Image (tube, rainbow, N blue to C red):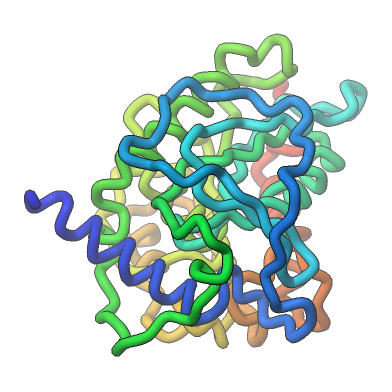
Length: 309
């Protein structure tokens, strides 16, 4: 295993282990926490991205419900699903939405479709990225079995991002597709951002740093890694939302914020007192529920919620 793949494996093993220990999405909800297999839901408008089937994957894509929401795993073929605004309200801004799930599953409803619908209601063209995942046991009961063994040491932010080649390829293809069909979808090619949740936030950061031609105009890191990293001089504006009681990222410092500020790039950081990990669009009594409206205000401040002049 070469030096690039070693940190990649450490990062994914750590995040996957944490996801299993917490429950796949860990939204800090007590009800409906059991995984139940469901039929593959309709995904109207989903477009295959053409990045190929994940090498070596044999288990079929599977779906389950948990926490009153919908998840998928064993994704081997990446897709992008558009959620377009009313043309009368379209701002020309677009956002690629990357759900989380430890690269073992995707929280498609809470961190995907519901986010995209909320963005579309603001006049933003939203596109849910169903990116390829690491293989998991085909049997749901085996997959749901709690992790065992001692916790792994937390890897650096750069180590977490290193080697996400299939997922970065999926994200790059998503940006390319939106730009190719920008006229049809009433999108300004220069105003395409990306927002990700947990592992999806890691992918958002990796796409920003290593995605070559993707070049998001702005990014959102929602309860993703917030460790220090090297920030390029042309890094996009970033919005970060995290709960102080997040068991994954709430206690490791906030070097990402310092890194962005040191690079003199725009950064907004919301640290909510409570919310845990995986709050997404779940209606909770904590102030973390307000993250989306804060994100929308931030977008409005930058002029992305009105048509470009």
